[in-house]
Image (tube, rainbow, N blue to C red):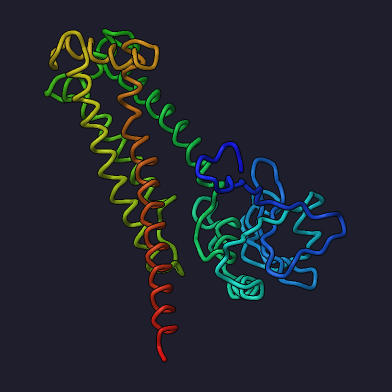
Length: 321
């Protein structure tokens, strides 16, 4: 018995899902091939006779291109080739290759939503996903949020009668942005604008609908766009509430806002300046992170629902005499 298993069963082993091809090894029919590029990986499907079907976008530099067939050595580009294993694929190898061929000539490449990774996973597993985009989204969300928050904070400091990002400069800038509503209104206006702008950008790029997408994929992207807008607004309002409630001086007077921003900033090891960056950045984080997360959840739900439907239809067919 495995000592780590209290129930007497075998401990599940995590299997590395990649197998490196030897220099002269021929991939199996329908294999999902992966080769490294600078900063990312390139994907394709081996369809036999030395040919690989892939999305040509970014295959050899920063140039877009259609889905095409190319030689295995050209696909590799002088680099090692790995096979991404899919032991639970619902398709036979020949079907995977045929799915790849069925999209030859498609020219709708988008690095974030329809790249070579998406294409290969769709061929092999029937799902429109890109694990490397998911990881990139996590990193990009953080960078975008802090950059947006910092830029908005600098903007606040530039608007006021007292310029700069000192406490007087920030308070003066918020008051001007409040357009008669005072610093509290300014504290709500700019994060809301930042969040709304980010959610529009997300909808126009990452979650944009494209020709040829399935109804399920369009539904998932629509859900992501809706949630992105809602989440950015909620984050902006939540930031205002946090500032009013977190400080040693409560409320939305000058002392309350200054105290609240300092309290929020202390969470990340800073003061009032850091708190302003956090409040400005939060709607951008929510617009990208929560919106994209909602898209993936709906996408997974649709996939599970489709799988259950297939299983039920198969069961009914098997039950017939």
